[in-house]
Image 1: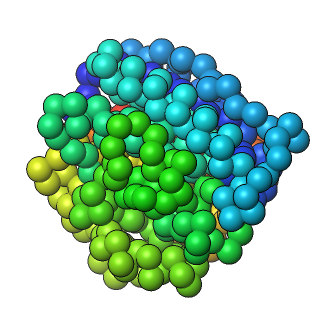
Image 2: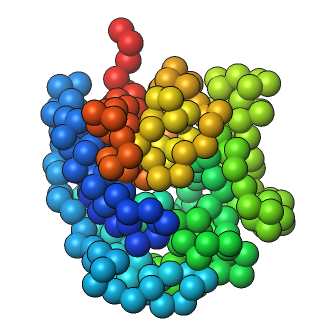
Length: 305
């Protein structure tokens, strides 16, 4: 499904949802790593559509401490929603470069609504060290980048959940969390109650990444239009991806991360892709952004031979 489609790159330099500054520079770091040029080199038609205009925290009030900067974040996600929807209608595959993970409320939401126009639904692969299933009622930080998956499944935070035409955007039984290893206590219960599918790092250690991805793609791909992949770079171990705001030891190694994306490519079911939470301030010689660009190439079908 992804093969042969033109690619639209969309940058979203948003860091209002994160607890640390710096992920607003993520899109530039991935571009500096040569993403567009390397996609062209493997035969893809690429258009970089620039960045979504985003405010910085110094110019805004945080507002509700349980969902900081929610109005501004929702405004950015609504803009992204329209751009991703436009890319789909033009027959392109959108690659969204974050920014913090809040952006997925717009990108995955648009992909889901585009499928709904044809009476279909999408599957969602959420590849992340964290669950991002907090709500304003359960959060311990008030940081909205810990809430976008909750918004896509619905109904809170409502400012994100109501973007577009429908709530919820994605069915919990078509949603798969992969690589999780750091959950808040109340968030654990929300994940259990929502009945999303969950493959922790323990599952990956026990069964291997290939078996986990086969199962995840089967779940997200069954009777759907395809899958949206939302890849948070903190799912990777900090030894290979130090430039993230919320690193957690014990993540995917280099080959496991590539296997994830290679199997996404092999499935032929990819509809759209997020690459988020790269923080160049915390990185070493752009190592994390370079890895991120490599992973996108794997998802777009670059093979070993």
